Image (cartoon, rainbow, N blue to C red; front, side, top):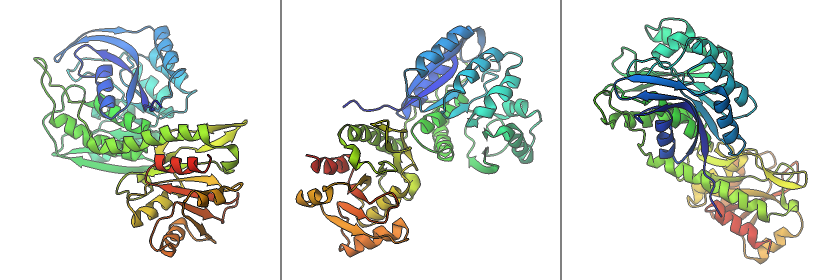
Length: 434
């Protein structure tokens, strides 16, 4: 079966030198295992020392690109870069308001070489149309001053600017590269709280640093990471991208947006496996085995420390109009109570990293025992899942069973089928359907 590739959308300008804009967005997202779809807003003639021409794409062509991508692809997250004009902002906002997908805004106004990449009215349009609907906006110092309407001279100013920019509800990542500080200090403003990140100041960040960082964040969001983890992981990666930047011309060096994060590949593999197995499960599972609240499948990374390291299907699998449907993509933190079952199982056997819940309707328990699966009965009686599973495993001589029969369910008894991987869990479920 063909695997499911995580997909994101970048709406930005084309950079003929290939160091920023659409070109670097594609490379940055690909380095994290995400397919980048594109909507080009402007074609620029630029190199490492100047922008000589800007040709804005007509609004009807921008609209056509948006429609073509969005009607065909399951987009996990969207980022905007160079939008150039108020008219383009309006087209993008009007289209995206009908799509419930995380939106990251990189408010591009000036190129690294110092030339303008926007027309008058852009900042006002961003504030009016896009900031109220975005998940995150990622301004540098100059962009933050324009969006907030104030000068930023110190940390207090930076934090106030974030509050002003995010007053409509969006989160703000104020990048500290243009600040006059010994270390780079970035400010993440989320839900009225600040996360402050400090990193060593390297050589001056070259062409494409802002595009690369926002692309990393967007790719991570599309893969199911929450906003804070998306930003933190992306910030670590942009440090590597800047430290390995390279020269291709006579002016600014180019940030290495193709830096690969090996640790991230593991998380992507977990999400990819879950998406694939959930599609296979839909094909084989009978309706009678779908609990009232739906089926979910959990899969943890090796050495998972908490629920944030356990992925599940966002919204699970439920019966709708006679069909079993998948309500969302694989996402870390979406496994709900199943994450606690997996984590406790891993404490006894680190190889057991997956679990799925199915209904106990029919004679399925008898069939499970007939095919040789070990089934342990559990009565939670108000206990939390961690305590319950710990007691089950201890009562089974420290061995993680294949199936836990849970009798303390408001919506009917369910079976928790455990295995090393989702494919292992799927094979156990298949064995009782034959």
